[in-house]
Image 1 (cartoon, rainbow, N blue to C red):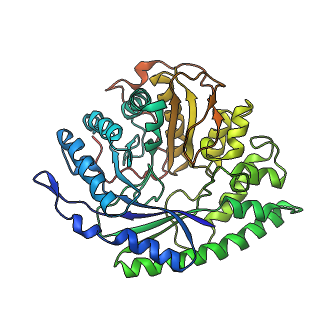
Image 2: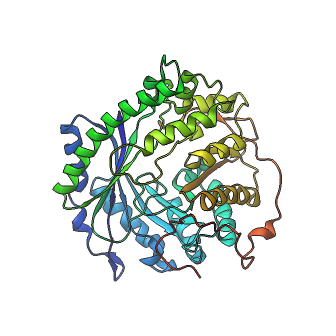
Length: 414
């Protein structure tokens, strides 16, 4: 088992054009790495997440804030830093957020398209689609969209980026594991779904308890709060670490075929039943570019947005690092985000849309990045149109409220 990330939630203080409490972060990343190494965990990244930046600085200070935040986090030993989402009513912060993302390769940010009222903001959905299109234009091969997402009903304390942000309280820790290889091992050679679930629960319970002990000890050492483990299945682009490959070992061939949703539900039930503190998504991750089998299916033309959305409806965490044609229009991107957000509020669970239009690529064209977390894939088609006026400012909100909880970002929505 690898640990994808330990994410530190930290309340930044910005006064007179500078971060005044930077010293609080000194030594934290090094202590985290040393603590996990002593316990034999392979820790990939240590990350820093702040409270939402629009509550810290005005729009004209965002670029300076982001530059100083990234410099401070890098000097303190953090691999990446997230400055949180803007709320649906904070669209005036988005242009500066885009400029900050273009200028700082370690920076992550987001737009929340749902509010505390439990509804989807169509205007925010439209702005999120436009942001994705702009980042695709302004960063090499659209790679900047790795560091941006539209968030729906996402609470603070998620360790996975770009969804991560802090609640503004005392120091907090959350942990994201990478456990797809354990699922594949649990499913190998089983004779029934009941046996598959039993073996999965046994293997993951043992690993989760080991990780909890390490995280709780670390939180105590840092005088911080342990928020929990995001027990989501995070793949890595190797065959033995593929979520889709694990499903196929159980007999679902190919992933997306009959039985996919049943196995997805089985896996999610096992994850959410683990006897450890949990935070974040705790669901099935199907990030196309990060999963070698999903990427292979995309290259073969056997994967679609509909399949990925169906998985999200049952147990997934949304649409993640999905490569799309470069000519996809902002309104099409917004329509995809709207579907994800509607699922989130109807089902009362956090979901994200992290979409990656590839400039110059057409549907079916090969997509390859020189990035160790990505596998060679292909651009998935986006078919159909919706009226751009759906997402015009002042067009109102969708009828998304259904009694399910909505995470939002802790701020009132106008």
